[in-house]
Image (tube, rainbow, N blue to C red):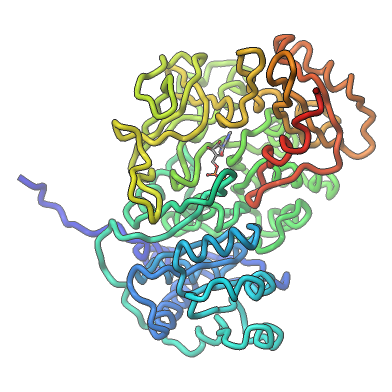
Length: 540
Ligand code: ADP
C-alpha cells in the first residue's frame, strides 16, 4: 500500500520559484566583472532566469545538453545556472584557473554545446576555441562589448538576450533523477573526472546544508559565498539561499582580503564561506583596515583543514563562530559539519574548542565508516583514535563518474574518499590526511595536516605546508615549507623547536624551508604535489 500524499518531483526550478514568491524583495548584491555593484532581488533573478531559459530554448538547446559556465560568483551567473538546470539542461561549471589543456579536455569530455563566460576569461576562450569544435554558442555574461565582439565574432551577449526574450516561461516538469549539473574533480593525478548531480540529489543536499547543525541558514541571513560557483557549486549555497530566502552577496572577482572586508562590512554579511587560504587573507586585511567585522556571526571553513589558530583568531578578534566542514566534489559536497551536541554544553571552553576542531559529524543523508583497507569493507572501531580509509554512502554521493561505465563504489556500495581519518563514538570525524599526502617514516604514518596546524599556530607563520621528503634511512621524513609574516624574525631552528612540546619527537619535521609563496590549486588549496616535486630530495 502506498502512502496517499502528493508526489512532486524534487526540482531545482522549485527552489527559485519559492524564493521569488516568498522572498521576492530580498536583495541579491553582486560585484560585476568590472568592479561595479549590481543590486537585484529574487523576483528579478527569477524573471531574468526565465528570460534566459527562453533564450537557450531559442538557440535550440535540448534536454540533457551541457551548458558550461566560466564565471565568477555574480548575479548573471546565478540567473543563468538556474535557467540551465531549470530547463532540464546540465549546468557545467568550469574552473577558470585550469590549464588550457585541462579546459579543453573537460569541455570536450562533457560535450558542452554552449559556453557562457565572464569578459575576464575572453583570452582563455579565444585560446582554446580551435580545440573545442563542438561548442556551438559562446555567450558573454554582460552587455554588448566591442572588444569581445572583435575577438570572438560569433559571440552573443547575455544582457542583449535578456532584453530580447520574455519572462513568461513555465519550468518544465520531469523526473527528479534527471541530471542537473556537472563538476569535475581537480584531477591531481590523471585526467579530471566529472561528478554528475541530479535534481533530487541537489534538493536533498540543499535541505541538509540549511539545517541548524549544518550551516544553520535562515531568511535573516546575509550570505557571502566566497567559495566559487565553479568549486562544487559554491558548496551548494546558491540553492540553499533560495530555499531559505536569504540575501546573497556575490563577490565577483574580488576574492582578496581587503575586498572581502569591504563587502562584509558594507552589506552586513552574517555568514561567509570559503577555504582556509581565503580566511588567511581576510584576517590580515581586517587587521589592516581596523575592522572587527561586527556583522559576521559565522564563517564556514572547508576544502582543507581549518588550522586551530585560525578558528581562535575568528573567535577572539571578530566574535565569529567558525564552522569546520568537510566534503568533496563527489559528495555535492557536504559530508560533515561541526556543531556541538547538548551534552558538550557543560564542557570547559578548551574542551569545546577541541571538539570544534574536528571536521564534524554527518547530517542525516550521509553515512560514514572507516575501513582497514582502501575499497575494503572491514570497519575500524569508532574510538576517535584508530584511523583508516574514510568511506561514505548517501543520497548526494556519486555512484558512477560521468561518461564511465564502471561503478565508483566498493563491492558493498560505499564510496572510498581517498582520505584517512578516524571517527569517535559520537560520529565526529577527525581527518588525518589525504592518503596521498600522508608521510611514511620508518613504517609509521605521520599526518601532514597535524603538523601544518601546529606550524600555522606560530604567530610569525602565515602559511605552512608539510610534505614528505625522501630519506635514506626512514624512507620519508616530514619537512615544512612556510611563509613568514612580514617582518617576522623566526629562524629554521625556531620553527622546528616550536614543534617540540606538541608532537612526539620522531614526528618533528627534519627541515624548515621559508618561501615567498606556496603554489595554490584553482580552488585555493596548497598544491603539495608541486611542492613534493620541488623539495622531494632536500634530505638526501
Ligand atoms: P580537489 O581538492 O581535488 O579540488 P575537492 O574539492 O573535492 O577536490 O576536495 C575534497 C578533498 O578536500 C577531501 O577529500 C579532503 O581531502 C579535502 N578536504 C575537504 N574539506 C576538508 C577539511 N575540512 N579538512 C581536511 N581536508 C578537507
